[in-house]
Length: 169
Figure (cartoon, one colour):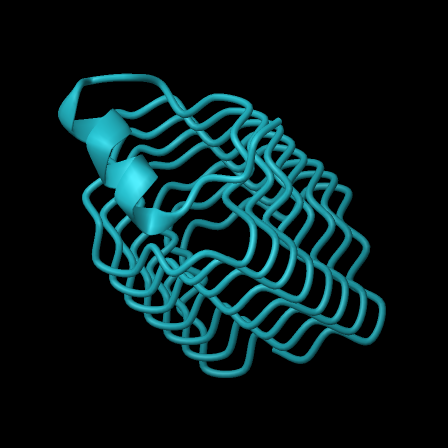
């Protein structure tokens, strides 16, 4: 897997190419529009995606540990089996995304919109979800141990068989 820089990513996007399996780690990709792009199985550890548009993008099975997705738009994105532990996802929009089996260990998702998101089977231990909107989200079988949901909107959320040990509501 060859490491790509910002210019190479922009050239591939302009040609309509897939980014699946690419090494985008530690790259500044802030503000880029990745709508409907296949970015599955990418290495995006420590990548700056601040303000990026990833609507309907396929990010499944990607390693995004410690990536910065602050102010990003990920509406209807596929984030199944993504590793986002220690990620910064503040004030982002994940409306209608599939985040089944996501790893959000110690991530900061404060102030984000997670309306109607599928977070079932997710690892959300010690995740900061304060002030987030989780209206209609599915958190079934997720591990929310020690998570912070202070001030979060949780109307219609499914917490079936969740581990909520030490969770702040």
